Length: 613
Image (cartoon, rainbow, N blue to C red):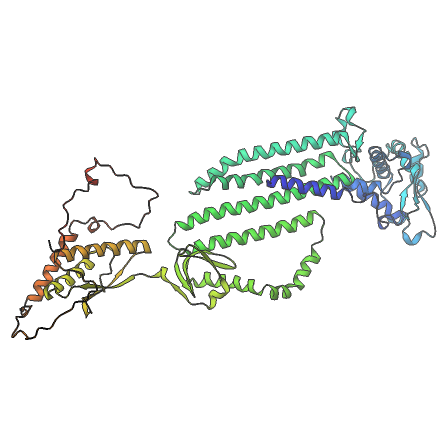
């Protein structure tokens, strides 16, 4: 299901839940506990209506007995405005003129006008066309004081009678509109009738508002798409097309929610409909904003991840995912808090409970907290980085990801091992990825019939290859005839490769091995393999046998070494890596194309001489 559909479903669910709420007209006794409380509740509510909070009209209507109006809400709002104007034109209402809860003494009716006016005010009123309307508050059966039904019915006539008086509150008469201004422009067929306390013209306005919201959604996405691309170009970076679309989608929905919240006030809904739609609009806008912030965090994370890959340090490769996850956690937390506020949930007890239960939570989440601080320790201490070849306990592989709770290692069997970060604080980490040199220690076995001069030439030739090759360490290496083996003379080869990764090490090791084979071939040195030879002792020994090797001269070793060096030079003299160091190993994804007509791809070279040839 698409997220926009999910948000719509959430708003509809809120609509159905709030529709079951009790009407706002059922005001608690407190605001109407006395004539004084009812008067100031009524005046305060209409003052807030004047400021644009049209939902307060229900509070004002709760202070009036609407029996004479047959429950017509639109007509009731007109009479409420008329009564407010009448009170406004009389004088500034004083608390001392109205009895409070302690001043009633069993009274069930109180006449505010004209009884409570001064003689001067009565003389002024008598000078105008006053037809005897009164303002009376009566105690209802539910214990609430209200303007009685006659007062409500006579309010428009009283307003006309007092219209010649100067307004004591100095309020512009256009400040309080007795009916919505949009209603005045609606055709008569849409005015008067209502469904679920919402008039026909308001239903029509809601349909137009929904359509307008979807239009704003499409327009915002079309306008913001080139803006986002231009910003990415200015930052000298780029993002995946899917990431760009996911970033723009909730921004359009956020604009839709803001338009709905702004335009709902022009429909001047009241009661349950106003409560439900305002709550649904706020929830929709908050969820869309949370979604937009979430996707924007993904976009920034992708951008900074690309920039981190371009740097030599890998610590930012670890920090970017961690910061990205932390930001998204905060976004969700703020989204939940504001969503709860829009639904009128009291989150103060929840926050207090979290503070009290923090200790219990710490004990319950002990392992999680240890893993979190373990990840912090790993970031600060930096025993390894993403991409390093490490050995942690009995786990060996390449570090793939460092998270809040655990580190994931890809083994050389291609399995993934998850290591809790808490164990990394105490574990011994062997980081092969930080080796400057990679050692190769092997033994070359040659036949026993190899002459000393051949061995000296062979070992010196190998040393010359080590000194020549592009990735070998030149300041320390060992190539010596070390052992008399059971079936061979053993030459120790102990060298180091200065390479960044394993694939390059294998390639350079192969290069050196092939050159050693070529060198042995040119020096006619034969490699040995495990053999067993049966010697039959003669009955009569040979007297004074001739020695197999001649005595060495003062320069025999030098001549042999020089022969090996020359052979090594012939092998490496035409190699391309003498002038340009080879790059890292690149793996091709398919079969290699060979062009027979290309002379550089011919295989008809002069073959190397066979051993002994």
